Amino acid sequence: MPLTVAIIGRPNVGKSTLFNRLTGKRRAIVHNTPGVTRDLRTEYTQIGNLHLFLTDTAGLEYSSTDPLKTRIHNQTEHAIKSADIILFIFDARTGLTREDEFFAKWLRVHDTIVIPVANKCEGTAAEAGRLEAYALGFGEPIAISAEHGTGISQIADSILPLVKDPEVASHHRFKTESGKFINNNDRDNKPLQMAIIGRPNVGKSTMVNHLLGEERMLTGPEAGLTRDAISIPWVYEGREVHLIDTAGIRRRSKIDKRLEILSVQDSRRAIKFAEIVVLVLDSNAILERQDLTLARQVIEEGRALVIAVNKWDLAKNREKALAHLAIRLERSLPQVRGIPFVTCSSKTNNGLKTLMPTVFDLYEQWNRRVPTSALNQWLISMKDKHPPPIVNGRHLPLRYITQAKTRPPTFILFTNRGQKLPTSYLRYLTNGLRDSFNLYGTPIRINIRKRPNPYEGKDKSRT
Image (tube, rainbow, N blue to C red; front, side):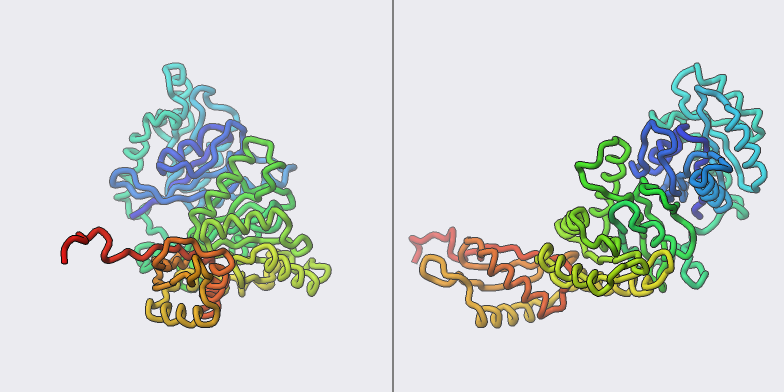
């Protein structure tokens, strides 16, 4: 049964590096700037026969005067209470600090099992710092180098005996809106991958918290709080969802810091791995240039797009805002007609109930498969209404159409000639597919192929 393991420690001791090493993925952003990680990140991983749900946390800091540090500290405390085991990381080269000792005393208040881990033990110079950790009272410290991957097996060896303890072993569970839990092993379908993107400070993390029904993501008036793309397992009305909160994305010309570049790259990577993307807009700054850039990127990746107009309670002129949104979508994104949008307020929770039904409806369209017979009947009617263009004195013969795949709906149109269809006629066919088979709001791809000649390659001398 999987254990929940939280990686805890003060800033810049290598928690995210160890998280990436244990999961075998470069999920968490790693940078030499202290305090890069802010939100909790949880990933399933397997080390040999050991199954874990691993949580990366922000650096342990406490301040009664800094509201942001206080909120981060509260999130870390939540991770500690939810964990079966804590990996308490410290820098062996620096040795134990006052902060390490303070937080070790704080960890002893909790009932969770603590395993001390001495990181950065690349040479013998770190041995003295590792031995200092015996004074913490958590047992023998494990010497590792998260950056170089040494000593990682010792962590698994320390955790493995605990799996046999029925009080420690636990099922991984997803919480539903009703407060009930379901077992991870009961999944019939793959979870829906849903990313929430947008410019900084449009309310993405607040929206995620309201959807989850808990303060899972760090929020506040400060712009740019979220730095990693955080994937959160969730269940909505019995359907599993991987909800991905991302960092705010500004225009490339305004991104000048290495850390922000890494955050933006992480957000763009989340779009590629998502299935449904929710683009969050500010009601008083609808579809600005950067919003359109993000929307085009989602469409180019073939992802289904939902627009959430957030802060609707603060909209100055709602009718004008909706009219502006409709015009901007029609003029700037004509290749995807019928993009669905919802108006909501993450702060008051108004309108958010319509978001997930809209998402699942669009997801169904994104996965829709049209029978070949219906497609070819449709093609005949489209050619009758508007014949194909004339090439070399003859109408371009469009013989046959079939759907190659879904996600997004992709079709192959066969012709006797290899000429490419004009963009205008291709747009005519694309719009026809939307109208006839209810494929609004999802990208549609039509690939042209030359129909093979059955006589090509045969011996013409034979009679």
